[in-house]
Length: 122
Image 1 (cartoon, one colour):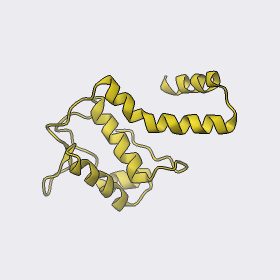
Image 2 (cartoon, one colour):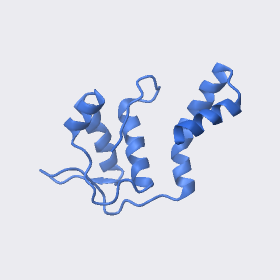
Image 3 (cartoon, one colour):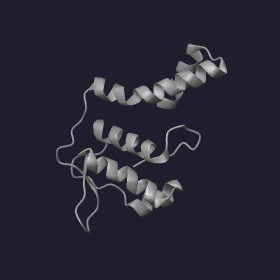
Image 4 (cartoon, one colour):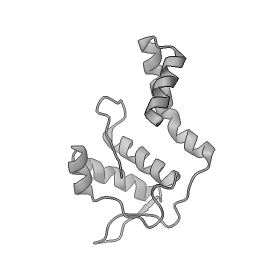
């Protein structure tokens, strides 16, 4: 699973992880029953504190998107479901607002921003 931390983002690291994991569940990259990477492995890979990863995982458990069983890996909850297109688009909304704000501050034209986004999506 490709997780990444944007150190320049205003959003905290745990919140960034939660968003990415929720999006992976929402679009089906993570299916019910799939194990999430260990806290330690994720922390080392991303260069962040294990407590930050643990906090993100706990948020998934509290929201019912993940299940924790003692001595076993954290897994996507059996009741986790794919979201509709509208729900998935809503997950993007905070990031889109942030991109739009940065683009306005930089004086970029919408066509330039859209071209950059298209390149990133390919």
